[in-house]
Length: 554
Ligand code: SF4
Image (cartoon, rainbow, N blue to C red; front, side, top):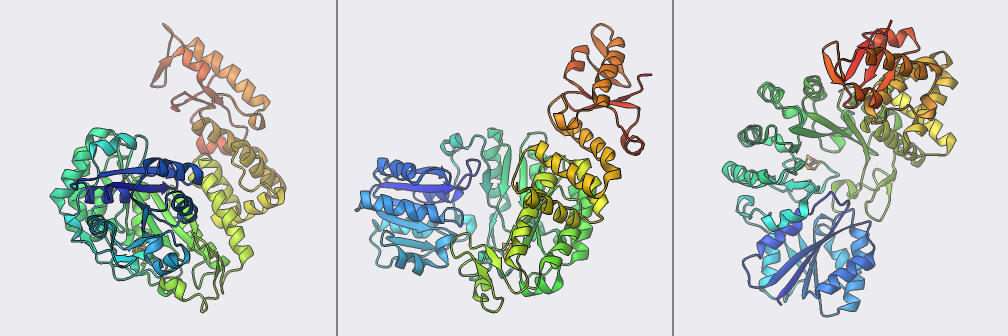
């Protein structure tokens, strides 16, 4: 056996597949030919199979996840029928906890490695793919002894993609829906000096994002603080952002003090809250002090230097539609830039799955095993939440309506009430999923015209302000044009161009070339209320770099 191919099928092009690199590095010292190929799930099974066949491997290893499982099932049949002598080994979370079913369902599979794969894969390769048992338990040495997987050669294909990095493996928690809680996976940390050296490796590649995939990064203070300190020292001003999944309630005063000094844009945090309902949290084995979560996230949001991402899960036990709305409102109020409302995935092998009858759960039997309904929530409520989640993504997470969203929420008192109502409008228009800015504008406009007609002019001011401050265009779209927008442009342009000396405008502390006036957008509010809320002059001009200049042309 001398030709080994590792196959990754990723969810998106920007995602890379570190599992392949770990496996490749586990056999790098052996005298054989090994390579890795990566695709996305958007690519056809034929294309993936053709590429594998072109390599004519003796052993093909595929890492299987919830997002690529069905594609893998198709591809492995195509490959084995064209190359019957090939040995195929699967690994990854999707096959680790129900390996028997996979083996029984697919003759094409020769082996499945369950759990961490590096040592087991090496053993299989050394045994020339002739092991007696089809299911090979993955047992690794301590994580600090596993080789750093990236090489300079690998980095050539990483341009514009996320880099995933682990400084620890395993999770001490026991969330009932999560595979990381199965089989008591101990947490193993890499040595601090080792992590520093590995982070040094990335520094010459101008990476946009390095994602730490440690399950909970802030578990052990003498591990996470030295790493954070090192990143601040080494990477400040580098343009690279570091992503961490953290437990917000574990942050203490000292951590917050440190984090307040982290340069803007260097860190981003993802924080799974999942629910704020105490009964739900108890049922899914999650501790969670809402008081601490709230205190720490609002503190971070106020400082504003770290991009914050919060997660909720819909379809959990003991939480119906109204309960989810409460969780949503509370988490929204924390002020994170990103709120993701995801849906429970009832994964094979989890404690959650074993409670299917007790919770009367109906879920998709194919990956990603998403919840359809349970004792507490109906399928139509789940469908409605999906639409709400999509709207939150478009409006809140998309960041294109920052002021308008605040205004709309204020009209409906609570954020969930606004999004719930907006989902009704989308349903009525039968246009769910429409991603055009102008279309979202139309929906907001019809909501206000129908329910709060006196606030229509004020909404238009908010929409125009957001267009000016967020979008790249220096013309208003049709829906936002009015006589006042035309007049503002004429008046503002004339006033500021008359101030130009030597082709430069100097005004109110700002200095810019006169030709920038053509690429700027002028704004004048049509309501007194907006004038009081935002304006420091009767007009505003947004320069191409989005700096804003307030002025009084009279
Ligand atoms: S959800 Fe997160 S904290 Fe809970 S068991 Fe899984 S990895 Fe650990």
